[in-house]
Amino acid sequence: MPLTHIYISADKPDGYVKKVSQSLHEALTESFLVPQKDCFQIINRLTDEQRVYDKEYACPVNQSRSKDWLLFEVTAGKPRDTKTKESFYQMLSTKLNNSVGLNPADLMVIISTNQTEEWSFSNGAMATLP
Image (cartoon, rainbow, N blue to C red; front, top):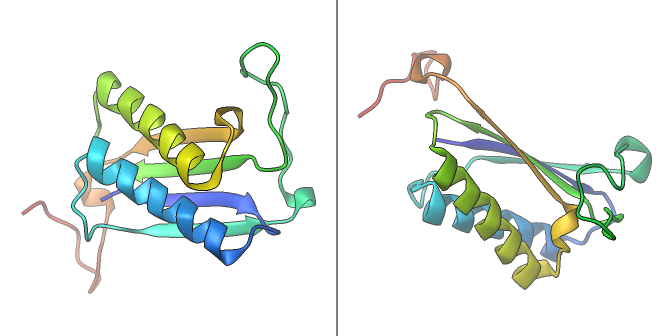
């Protein structure tokens, strides 16, 4: 069960935000094999002053981040191999480009993993795998 924080510009309309959310969920279900109903996202709409970032850091030559910069912090309950993560990054980039026209230089993703016992989904009970 990934939980994702999405950091997005406050000036983006609701329709744009919804497409970003849908693109993320599709990429997770297709590349991370997350169940369709397993969707947990927190969308953080921030002003330009609340999003401080280097426009060129680790971007390809002659590319830079724009005001459309998106950050996804994905907390996943189990580790994925390198090939799966690479597939997810590429799939998310492609889906965002197709759905909202996002330049790939404007996409940043951070994946963190933890153990099942570090989750409680409800009732104050430690999570267990089915």
